[in-house]
Image 1: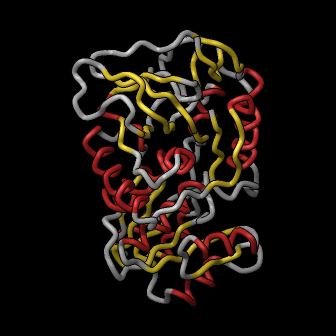
Image 2: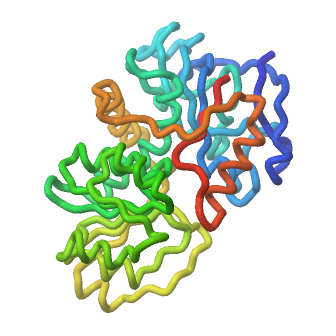
Image 3: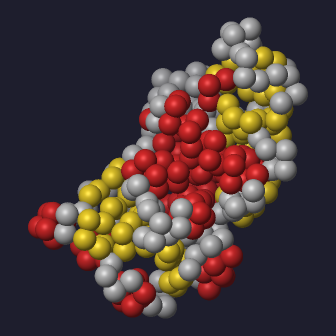
Length: 331
């Protein structure tokens, strides 16, 4: 038996239980990982609350991300061996069990080596948000050296990854945050320009810092203001949206097409294994070189799983997020 955090039926964070479940079995194409760290993502809270539904097993173990050490490898697995340090993401979705457990069985194709100089905490914290940022920046926006990107919410989980990767790609990074402390954190993670939106207009600051407009606008808020965003975009600018499942904001078609802009929406869990693997290789290279750092705001234990969801939900759904980064739980 193993310790795990799970729920029987969707609901509030109070439905999360921490108790014993049977150890997972290892399929022919799977590995069993002894988990040492997991992290929390907004999608985890959507699955737990029932906002996002999949045909999931019950009881359902929560969580998408994990890092640990391989304890078993299936007979068809050649890429990994017992004792290898690894990380994974994209679990707990599409009928798969999650990661908040002492042991998890995952398809080897969705598992990636963890560099020796990168901790399990860092690996888990960079997983989903890192791959999300990579897909959006390189597959969708095709960001180029010398371009300018505006990242809304640069101190958050995805935003902090986007900023760092954009800098690695040679772009100028402008970001927003709601406090001076969050602005300072964003600066430490590579932002060239920070805008405290409580003190000044984002539009006015962008007009000052990028008078020709930004080439990429990365939106993390649930409800975009497309009028403002398109005004801030440069000709042929690209806008990325990856949040706001229920949002239905007005869209100014005229200014959008006259500027020859493009709008890109995507969900990380719909990426192919090949796309995920390509992103993971870059993440590993940058983490090993200490060019990509985990943005960990709080570290808890598996017993705090329900509290971690309360904190994540308050930050995701509240008017001003209190978290400046990721929640990591040690298992």
